[in-house]
Length: 61
Image (cartoon, rainbow, N blue to C red; front, side, top):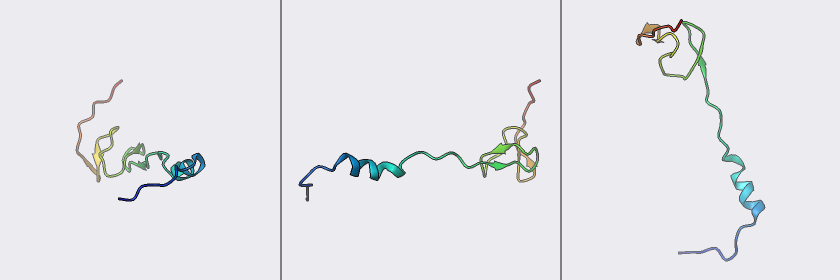
């Protein structure tokens, strides 16, 4: 099995890791209440998914 002959420099290592940063979540808009939500999931605010109510959400007043 081949082994490296020399160690990688710090610049080469950090250049490779430049694309490993975490990205923010992509959010879509709920068509019912217009809140931001994760795509392909029921809205946590109103409980709708694909124009149907699938969750019973109690509003906190």
